[in-house]
Length: 127
Image (cartoon, rainbow, N blue to C red):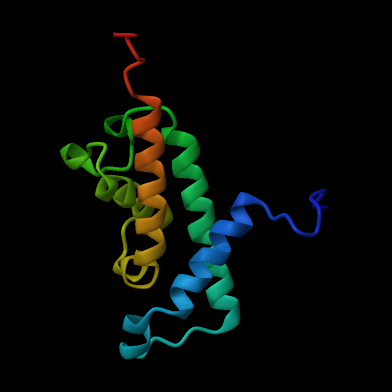
């Protein structure tokens, strides 16, 4: 049971909603003729949300090079690398995720990159 107030949602539900929005408005998916039923959209949205939460939990406050998603030496603290970690955590990097959730993965990648940068900033020296 959700103990939250009616006007509050969990972070998982928020990410799932954003993933659904990204899929529903993705013109590329429409042009490619990809038709998803509502069950498929919801399923993929929550798979994406769970992957985002997993990557966020696994990586904070570690350096991205400590990821274990077989992305290899490409990993830095750049936004694209957070995206690679999310994609790999979802489905091994299959192209379907890149196509349909690229916008949302980019958003979450920015979020993780900014968090990592804040955590790893040098404390002020007072000079």
